[in-house]
Image 1 (cartoon, rainbow, N blue to C red):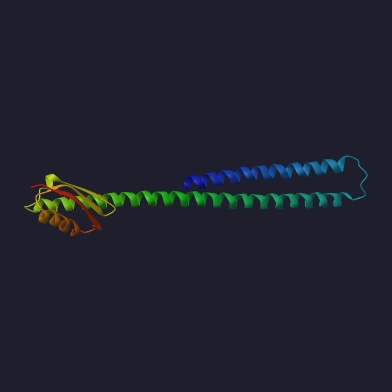
Image 2 (image 1 turned 120 degrees about the vertical axis):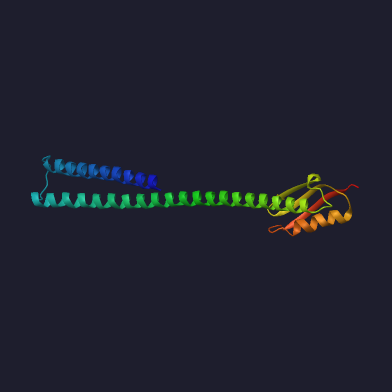
Amino acid sequence: MNATRTSTAASTTASSSRLRWAVLTAASSLVLLAACGQQDDRTVGQKVDATVNAVEQKTDDAAEKLRQESADLKARSGEALDKAADKTTSAANQVVATVEDAAITTAVNAELTKDPTLSALSINVDTAAGAVTLRGTAPSTVARERATALAMAVKGVRSVDNQLLIKG
């Protein structure tokens, strides 16, 4: 954010310098034209007034352009910050989801280990967005169903895909 402000300040300073240069150039040109000896029925005061008015108009035009460029830059930098915030939020959400899935997998493995009829070593537990998949073997149909019930009882589990094969 500070880099954006520094960039905006540098851009504003450069634009102000260009504006001053343009105003001085315009004023000098008008004075030189007035002094060229061309037929002009205006008094010196009228010529100075006309030059001042022209310079004021150029200054106003340049100031308006600078305000518009500043507003455009502010809008573009705001859009960039919004995109960066969205990406950061998305990345944070992915990290949270991964940590939650890892916690679910650990909890399901712990529950399977506690059951005397199931062998946690023969059951692979995978979790994605709260959906648990059980792969491997179970000693019986009852043990297979018990694995599903144990997994469903873990906080955060949304569904269980029991792919255990009966081996006994």
